[in-house]
Image (cartoon, rainbow, N blue to C red):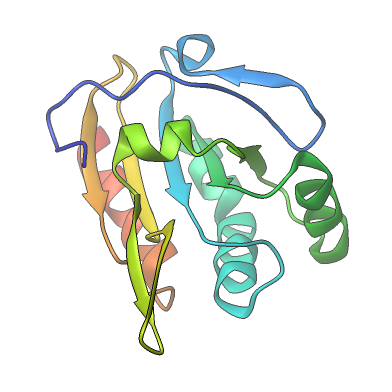
Length: 155
C-alpha cells in the first residue's frame, strides 16, 4: 500500500460521464481519494452520501473528492442519479489503479477467500504527495475525520 510521504500513484480513469480524469490534471489541488467496494450497497451508499453532504466544505478547502470502485461508468451514473450524489466517481474495472494503491487485496467472508477492495481513503497534497491515509475504513464518522485532517494539513 502507498505510504504517507510517498508520491501518489499516477492514474487516468473514466468518470461516471465517461470523461477521463488523470492525476496530472489535478495538480495544484488537494485530492480526497476514497476506494469503496460497490455502488448501491448500504455502507458505500452512506459513505457517498456523506461525502456529497460535505462536498461544499471540501470545495472551500480547495479539495476534490474522488470515489473509486471496480463498477462500470454506467453503474456509477445510475448510483449518482439514484442518490443525487454530488461527487465524482471513477471506474477502475481492470483494478490496475487499486493494485497500485494497494487496496485490491485478498479478503475473507464466510470462509471464502476472494480478491476485493479494502475500503481506504488517501489525502493527496497539491504537489502529488500522499499526506494521510486510512485503511479498512469504518464508514461511521469517517467523512468528518477526513475533513478535520485536511483542515489540519492545510494550516
